[in-house]
Image (tube, rainbow, N blue to C red):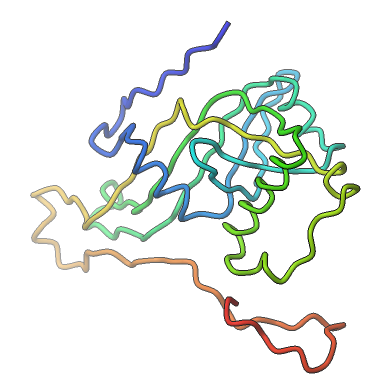
Length: 208
């Protein structure tokens, strides 16, 4: 029997949405998700790399992984992706906040068993995490494919929530002589660091 998940927004409903396009935009902008599940009455939340392929989320791990084994057996899970976009400095502690975008996807993941499909999923994951890199890499061996489990979670039951914009101060605080506004935050790439055993003369590719 399929378990129904309540995705109604009880607090700040104006920030919530069930729009699939918006969910995909938020998912495509991230690279790390958190996978939540409960095993033997103990909750777990595991950070993992992910990618979206059409209407499903892809995660992968070792075939020996406890997470992978249990999700593959039909254990329900929740995958969450969050972007921290800014600190909102209001004129009071109560109204101070954060600007963010988040998606929660609920359901049961299934294992990708077909070899060609697994290769396609791995390619999608590499393209999402490291755009432009795949053309430089050798193909995964059968041994490597057999050692890796690829799971797909349908993006069917989900919810998004976000906050954007300036502080929402109380009218009684607007005359306070204190700065108010937003400090934007973003993730940026640093200078690449060569591997210590890199063959001399190899130049850094443009896609870095």
